[in-house]
Image (cartoon, rainbow, N blue to C red):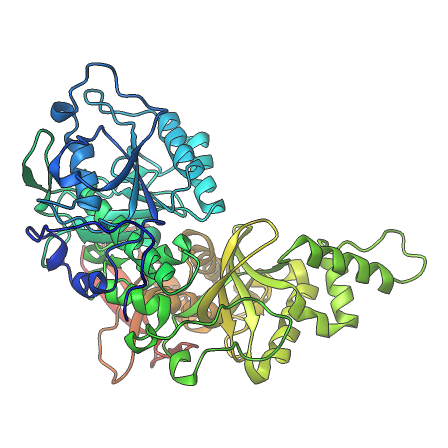
Length: 599
């Protein structure tokens, strides 16, 4: 692919030393396509930067005027962290920046002496970055949080990024423990941990439950960067892995521009996670340190545009249509390469515009029964279900959504020959309403859509009804050994553990295996019943790579581990539910197997 001609003034980037850029797998191929685009802006919230350093000479940088550097401050002495991080992104001489041709907006928030920055200040700086038009916000800092929760104002700033489709990239922290920093641990933030050149997590790099949903490992050892006052140095830390990820994201956004697409930071962030290299170790504890996975540039490109051969043609924009036909521009050979999803949630719907919403309001009132006590409301599920039962063809004109915790996760679109059947299932789910605790969907990700609320959602294309199930937990539990309330309680505990404690987006292989296990309570019931007979209680649910090989498979074990509450020193009992998620709808492999876990 030949990079598009940029209207930006060309700059020279002569650096080639250090790990840096050229030793990161896939980086040279990406840099052959683009060195960045001036219309892609990365905001750097950090310390002061030595703008006179040779590494930043010629870089397209602007300095915030809202956080003035105190008069008389010598940035060549105090600006170590900010200078280093800025050079990893934008370095042009002495340091090979990841995205030297992108534009930077520097917010010198972090003080040279005081180490702790109030969350309110972090929030204000993030808000400024969004207001100034940043596509990406790089925050190589954070604040330790026992719970992973943040103050309201920082939560609001992170939500502002999500609402404006700004990718916030933040360091996971250097405490070397199962612990979290904010804002890295918050939903919607891309958290970055550090690994060495061999892909091994560095000892000081944090890990934790939240990072298993939004964390990425990136090179963070012996990174080459600029030092204030002149010269360069190699340093290690999650602070310096973070601009590597921000820079790669900026290059992918630049590539979107060069391909004639609209830059989509949210899609790039999701692609970096979806395309990451997953842990292949047998130990679940060791895999936690991998977070979601390791930075894989080729994998992210494939998650965005399909296989390498699919990068060349210009893509056809994808959006929710009122048609039940397959999406244009997706060949059968490319369809199988799109990222698969098997997710759990609740069904809902939204509108693409106020005009679409108002058209439903008009049509629903025209179709209402004479003498109705109240006019139909398009936002009232019962009214919408009643309308769609009379006019089923209208089901494709709303944006069907899958939600977690009342927040839309995906837009759902039926495609192909079974589209009408798929929309009929959605209508049935809507009619059942609160009777359904969860539904499952199986599809492939392609494109995004903006709702009337302004929120952007990834579109999940559903080609066939397989994997579309809806259920009431009460009914499902009642089917398993009626008359045994203790077992039913334990079965409910397992399902709710997956629904709430282990909820996920259903994109990774491990997540798809876990979600499918929650739809197959028969196998879980077998494990719970046997453990109950031995007086044991459920302690943990986790997913591990499968213990045996299957040709062309993608096999995972969902492990249910039990402990004896009466004898704490007794070895634990575990059961493996083996699944193959190589296909869109996972399948179980053989019977449930049990084994003892030494303590």
